Amino acid sequence: MGEVTQRLARRAFAFTSCSLGLKGLARPTPVYRVERALMRPEKARGIDGLRAELIGRDEELAKLKAALVQVLQGRGQVVTLIGEAGLGKSRLVAELRLAALAGVGSGEWGVGEALVASLSPAPNSPLPTPILWLEGRCLELTMTAGYSLFVDLLRDYFAWRPEEDDRARGERLSACVRALVEQGALSAERIEEIGPLLGNLLSLRFGTDWDDRLKNAGPEQIRHQTFLAVRDFFVAVARRQPLVLILEDLHWADSLSLDLISLLMEALPLAPLLLLCVYRPEREHKCWHLGTIAARKCLGQYTELPLRELTSEQSRRLVESLLTIENLPPTVKERILEKSRGNPFFVEEVVRSLIASGWSTGRARVPAAKPWVHGEPERRSRRSACRRVSRASSPAGSTGCGRSCSRRCRAPP
Ligand SMILES: Nc1ncnc2c1ncn2[C@@H]1O[C@H](COP(=O)(O)OP(=O)(O)OP(=O)(O)O)[C@@H](O)[C@H]1O
Ligand SMILES: [Mg+2]
Image (cartoon, rainbow, N blue to C red; front, side, top):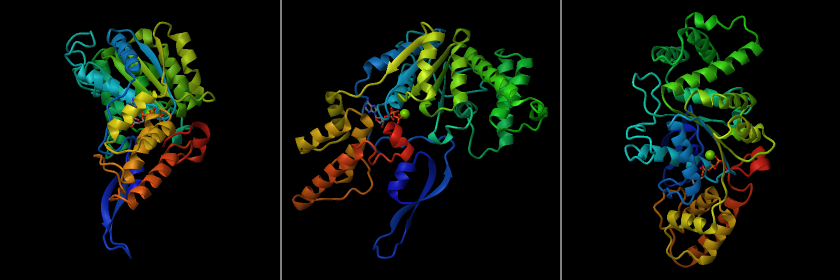
């Protein structure tokens, strides 16, 4: 595939780059070969080589930190972070994680010096890290697959590698859950029930009698027991070390995953657990009720965090921090601000198209940037840039939305 497609798909597949001599072209053309799908695909966001500082969002970040401090002090919390596509939900989560890491020893968290030493998962390490940070993501493609969110979370916990087979993963699961028994977080009897259920959820084989434990159970019984097993498992992990579960893109969550989140909310009194539920405001989707459920089940432990558009001043700062164009005409700048409507993703897309059109002297690496000189190319470039500005920020424009997506949410890919 060519550079543009590769850029859009770069967070979902592994590629190798090569070049092809094509008929009629003097120079070899850079192309990419798809090697494999990534185990945990992500959205392609941002501009290669450029990253704007976080603009605004002080209040939201402060509330997220406050919730994390509560968890570190032993009080479980639920937060719902809700905002339209591209408004910066995932960026805020990433900033919280960075802030927690940077807070090591700074005393900022008010919970003692060494509490936040590392956030990386270390499932069977004998000395637990101060916080365990796990991320599970829902995908539009797996909306109908049961438990897809929790499968992703558990993959993160068990740190699966692409080269491992099911048997190796089964052995790791088995070792990890047994470690919870050794650390006193779960009883040996309970692990004999939880292990096979988690293996079944993740479609693993153990090569032991765990493989046959559910042979005679009916679907409803398995569903019920799986719910309890997942709850008990995360409670056990959180007892070992405060646990942050990032539950991303719940507007694509399957029904079982949402019911399981609701069950986990009831476990907050049992362990230091932060459930950070991230989703777009899609009122017809079941995720929309999470806030109401949290308000009912987790009184005093629930924070609702709606995300709004950036103000025009903030959008202006975002454009300026991404783009170093000395003579960008004010009309183009105004058009960017008007078309992006305070949505940082749209601002980035517009800036990207400006760079690709040759406007920028910026530092970004964007394919198809054409060199231009003063005069006629400048005029052409300006026209093309403005066209791109309109396209990139039109509701279902060049954001790459599929048909179903543009209907519902004007979503970036
Ligand atoms: N406040 C901000 N300051 C600077 N850049 C931002 C800000 N908010 C978001 N961005 C950037 O805008 C892009 C879109 O943000 P992000 O992916 O977090 O949106 P989102 O709300 O998670 O969207 P989606 O619902 O599609 O997942 C990212 O590249 C992010 O770094
Ligand atoms: Mg996101």
